[in-house]
Image (cartoon, rainbow, N blue to C red; front, side):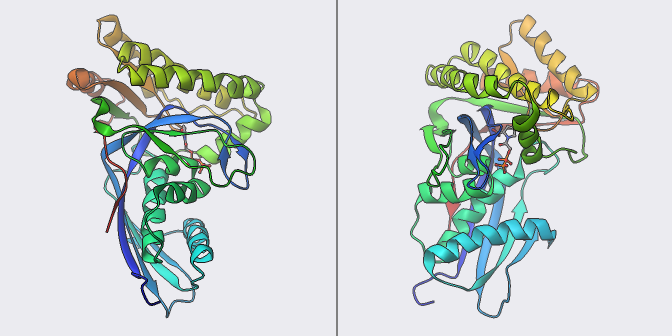
Length: 328
Ligand code: 2P0
């Protein structure tokens, strides 16, 4: 292993999609059926260390201080297999990962987790830094992870079947705009239908699937245009429609998946009341019941106070645009 560092540490951040990814065009290569656009979040970090060890007979994976479940270890090993294939090395590795934000917060730790893993693994096995390849590798593990490789406002195009090089790219750096995401956490429980299962059901059973694939690019374009113009009043309604359309698919799947809880509805109502009073704030939600408010930095304290005072909201988190991978 001459010339191979054999060890690397990488930090990646969670992201929230303003324009949602939901559903695949190629299951085997994990390619999204629609384009998505996200903001990378500071301070929601995952820190991952990869250490090669010739004595190992398989990869090990420790998550937040405890051995990970077999299914999680297998996903990590699959990503490492890709790095071993690219380098010709066969050595297994110890992987240690720590989330510096609550994983029941509705902020996907798989996005920051697989981005940090791809960054650390490629470096530890001696590959030169190449964020596009890192993003494509993270995408194969979890499509939203492709976006967490980059900082600021990040796009992941829809994938054409067979396009295994598909990667995310930066649309604007973090300093482009002081957009904030305020998370209203409404439960500490884990969700019952994961994103992968939920989006698979949507494609197979929702009568609205074709309409989603046809309309998502228009929502994406409108969101990209408003983001370029830094116009929250133009951005907000499209951000809202992207998530409500995604949830309409889940709701109209068979069996139906509903991610909303009563406190989610209360939080959405609190944001509607704020808007009625002139505060430009719009919601988004992912594959869980938490509500994420999208607003400008000038209004974030007021938004956070209103959500914190909403019955059923357990606590709030507040994030701003953050940087891409940090590698050493
Ligand atoms: C997103 N989500 O754009 C959407 C919105 C959840 C709702 O990307 O199957 O964990 O591993 O590619 O990336 C979460 O789905 O799914 C997600 P896989 P992933 O952020």
